[in-house]
Length: 75
Image (cartoon, rainbow, N blue to C red; front, side, top):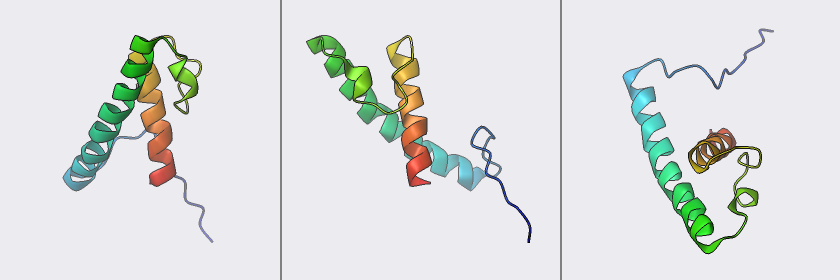
């Protein structure tokens, strides 16, 4: 039996994979960025709302980490 591994850090290999990645990443990023921005403006601890963003230093990297965490659950 062969062992298969999935490397999350690798780039999509074909054009269809790239389009699918963008169609998932961009809407998720916009949605989670709006949550983070709202939390930042209100003054609450928004990093605890987003999975993977707890130890990030700024909002963009926190949202990006949470999108990748979220995408790992749906792929």
